[in-house]
Length: 109
Image (cartoon, rainbow, N blue to C red):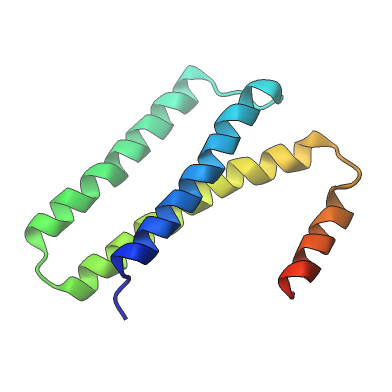
């Protein structure tokens, strides 16, 4: 099943929301990046951003193109989710476990 434009847009907007929270929270946390770390992140991000146009130019199968788009979305979500998870864990809030269990229960898990 091909991912629809609406689902892709929703996924990217969710990733964008988590990214905004990360960017607001990062200056207030103990997490820091060195210049080498930022250079590596920039190179990896550029490779992912360039892989899409290169792949779509040389690949004619819509199934493969859809798989690549889904993979990019999952990688982006994993990256911003990792930073968010780290920030939550290092925050030291004692209420976090009870809050997450309550949210999971409200969602039906």
